[in-house]
Amino acid sequence: MKKAMIATLFCLCMCSALGASASAQELVVGGQAVGIQVGTKGVIVAGLTQVETADGAKSPAQSAGMKKGDVIEKINGEVVNTASGLIDAVGALNGAGAELTVQRGGKTMRVTVQPVQNAEGQWMMGMWLRDGVSGIGTLTFCDPATGVYGALGHSISDADTGTKMPISEGSITDAEIVSVTRGAPGAPGELNGCADTQRVLGSIEGNTAHGIFGKAYTAFGGRTTETGAIKTGPATIVSTVSGSQPREYKVEINRIYRDAEGEHVMLTVVDQALCAQTGGIVQGMSGSPILQGGRLVGAVTHVFVNDPTRGYGVSIQDMLASAGVLEQAA
Image (cartoon, rainbow, N blue to C red; front, side, top):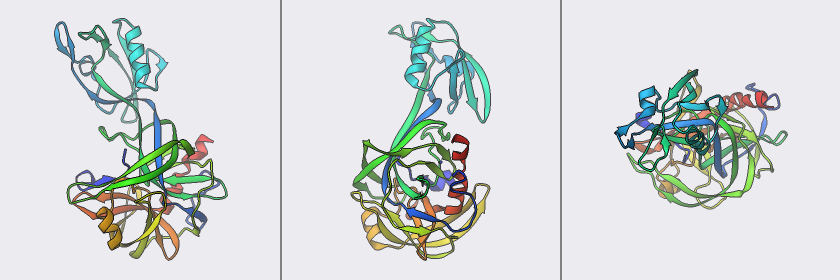
């Protein structure tokens, strides 16, 4: 149901220091636009295609049982993390079979693909490949004591397959919003920004259902406030929809509910200035902090496709709990 009704807002997830308790803690409120760049652990199969050969069109990958969304981790026992590396390895086989170690649905399997030569003489398997993603999102918080930050409020997933990106490396960078594509019913809008890849602000060390998390390399400006529990009623969100300065906008929390992934909220934008500028919630605002009573209580995550003034959010407690992935990476 969610896929039909909502859109994620990434225009594309602490450890003991953060803790996972529900008690209030002091965090720097985000709202700044950040550039997000990640490389995958393995190579994602974004699609299957035909290879035009001297004997007609063939799809070796499809014939071998490969599927869209598979993550290729190894070829003939050698680790591969880039599409170019995989293509080079296939070419070096000079027509010999390629044994691929593949992750699919949490299971590891081995698939042997027999490459074929295209009209130019290149050895190919018939797959579209992806090894990274970049885009614009919004910083949610930073812990001033540890430098741990959280952003997005949802995972980074492959746009074509919906597969959560298995991240090998990543970073957040400085960014500036240069224009806005306004949202309209049936057509989610978008923040159009420029990421400054020379100004790296932090690492990306975790990609979870409740956001991306890492260590900041520099202190983030902004107010420091306590966390709190979200409730229905008036609230504000902090977003950057022009330039590089965050602003606060009025919203209404309409509903709070829980599912297998945690606590979520449904909200409506009631700020006329934001509606006039963006049409409501647009892609790139994912991670915008939600404030109530001066406390940080959550982050914006999705927009209703058919009504850009309405969207979803996640609780700050769930974001902090998910940030525990960094304990394993430390």
